[in-house]
Length: 120
Image (cartoon, rainbow, N blue to C red; front, side, top):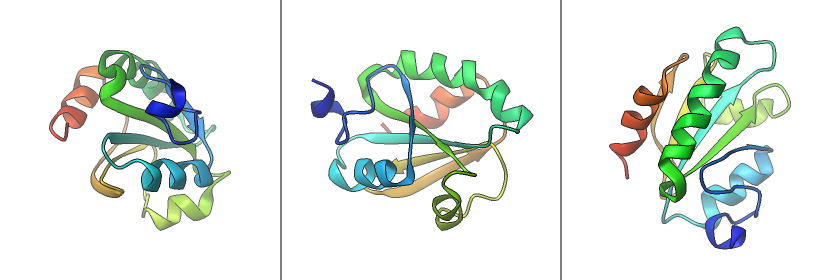
């Protein structure tokens, strides 16, 4: 079941998965029929920590409508650079293997849901 939802098997419906840059690439290119939300964060970032419960709530509400991922910008600096992440946290919305939208800063679950649902 996990491999039907996620190319890597790491991502589960309704949950936030912490991924590596390689896993993100696999999710982006291996299955392009669903939306991916990526939270680019750093462990030292205060607003990033504030975002976590809201992102988890949004992931639960989205269920299998979107794959919700987290990418540590320090462990995966080349990926953060490749996707032109300037501020933290940054939410990237990926559809059909490319970034179609982004949102910076800590936002509530409703704002995250609105951001994602315009692309589903």
